[in-house]
Length: 203
Image (cartoon, rainbow, N blue to C red; front, side, top):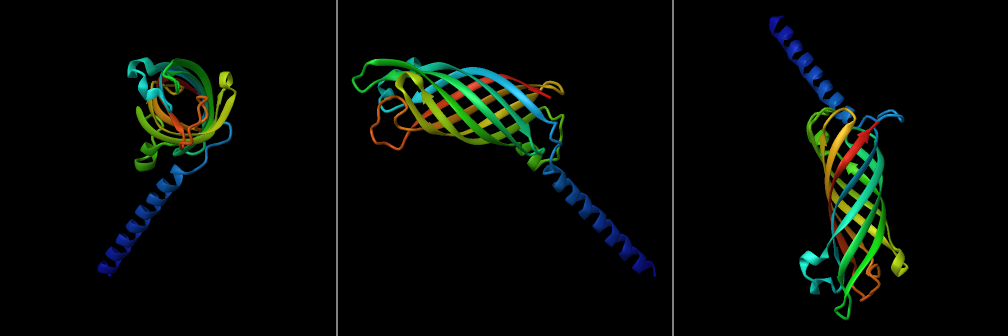
């Protein structure tokens, strides 16, 4: 009888632990209420455009400024989405070797993955979170009258200051159409790399 009782105890313990593990896994993907976990953010930083002839310009002369604003929502502790608008100034060389300077805008929708909450336990007060992102959108250069598709991939480094305030440091790359700089050479596309820092407010 004692052995049977011990066996039942072990089985009960195993069931409880398995249930706890399942509950933890489910909580990571449990949806937040519709009115919670919204955020807005703004950032400024540096930008490098990689065009067809920009390699002929000095690297330092190609570094420009950029600014961006975002708004989004965390759907679960792991998955989120945002809309971001970026204004970028680019400098480089044209086909004739002349220095050129122009502006363009990026509009994209991104999917966010909080890998810290995914790989570890969910912790709303965690100081640092690594958040890879991937997105699609469009790029528009008004001065050149060109609009192309854009593909975004990056890493958002989030540092929580308080319940409502975060510091964000974000590095990302954008693949845009070959025509965006006004010169189409038939290559697959051109790119833009940015590094920004800013703040986010969480509702």
